[in-house]
Image: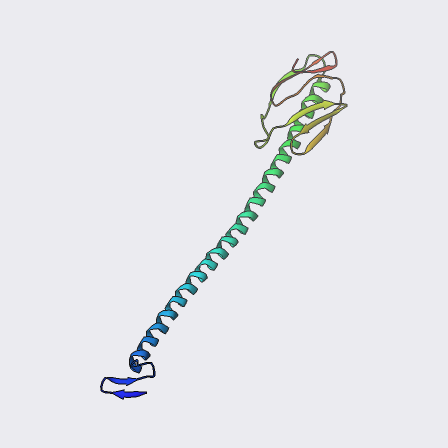
Length: 161
């Protein structure tokens, strides 16, 4: 190293104080770039983790809603099955000349359903199948969602005829 009026020169001919300053500036700039990159990665990880947690919570809530809807649909199906059975049993027990209009819901909690009356049973098919025992096997006609008419003519039960 040779020292002159303007400063000390290293073996490459550069001033050592300038080299030191340049190295200090480069180190500071590189550490700032690394810090900014690390901050970006940390933010991305935090957002990803938060999204994962909220997605899991949403799925749990959605699952519980589906369970509640299914349970409500099952309860409504059972009620309809018992209601139809009750109407048929009343028509049977009161005897000849009985008639009545009754209306069943068009859907069960937004889902369709069907009704079958056969062999002393009322069967309601929706997401599950529910049956209700009835007194008489002598039923002619069909019961359906919506308006229905039931009557007893000489001991035979007629539905929507």
